[in-house]
Amino acid sequence: MSRRAYFALACAAGVACVALRAHGRADDLDGPPPLPDDAGPIVQSIPVGAFVAEDESALASALADASGPAEIWLRARTYHGDVVIARRVALRGQPGTTLEGSGNGTVVTITADDARVDDVVVRHSGRRHTVEDAGIKAKAARVQITNVSVEDALFGITLGPCQSCLVDHSRVRGTSDDPELRGDGIKLWEAHDSVVRRSVMEDSRDLVVWYSRRVLLDENTVRRSRYGSHFMYAHDSIVRGSRIESNIVGIFVMYSERLHVEHNVLAGARGPAGIGIGFKESDGVRVEDNWIVANTTGAYLDRSPRSTSIPVLFERNVIALNDVGLRFHSSEEGVTFKDNDFHENVAVVEIEGGGDAMGTVFDGNHWSDYEGYDLDGDGRGDVAFEVKQLSGELTDKHPTVKLFEGTGAMAMLDTIARAAPVFASHVALVDPHPSMTPRRPR
Image (cartoon, rainbow, N blue to C red):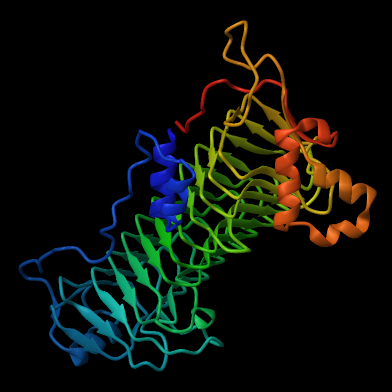
């Protein structure tokens, strides 16, 4: 991937393209293709002989009838009032079908196993955070929510408890409320073995996966929200093939084990708290084949892993155009960075509270500012790549200077150390076998 590709990704993520161009960060080549952005209702016709609820009264009666039709179709019109699905049934719409809530609670509440809602627009929930008023709230097993669009709802779609549930090809648009008052766009709580795929979430708070095991987030788009994906106690889960851009944080993982993050674009997480991907006290994590581009911090690790026997691996990722490529809360051990491409990050690494990254294994990564050579032609540099930090030396010798950690002045010191290594002896990072050619995701 060339500079032009990084540049295109950064611009797509809302980064200041003019500033990037001014720094000469444009060249030729393509980045990963954009994901489809057509989530939501699809075109489908009511089958001949199907049961059709012509109005709100007919819909309420059909849903309340325990021996009623297994499939209820809706016309291309607006149905007013909140809906409760308490039996196994498929509720299906067609282009123009809207379920508009009362504005005093959740619009569609699902309490029956194996129920399905398909091809409708859901809108106008209440605004109570205490009970999490939502567009759709599912509290049953094997619920399917497909081809749905949720708008003007405090919480978009909430699953929990909701084992083996599915959200597919659906769209959630956040409210126009103050961003601090928004609810989560998609929330999974005790939703083991559930899947969210081919869906789009915009202008919401978080996509949450909490206390849920074996969750799959696949081919989703999350933009202009707070957390693109927030995992907590979400063991054995996967997030892959997604585009997570222009959020405050791309992916953040807490207290989770064996999470796999692969083939995602994590771009444009800006501001003081901006992080492309971060881990806190998480073990057995694999981060592979991702594009981590144009964030304030590319990757952040805080006590991850908790034990070196359950290591964390970053492999074949592109980590480019970030203000800080890697930020460690302390001197992390049990982490390996292998065959990644570190490209034109303003600072390669920063370690909060002093320390270094010497306990982290770096091997075979490509570094855009490596100035070594490869005389034997094996594709690996003949001398190690090192990052030296003059700021670390100063804070070790003069603890009061730590007050200025994270400031532009301290970053300038490290820039000087890279330009003239003779001024710094504090080695922060070593890759003994740097790659001479850029690494790319598979």
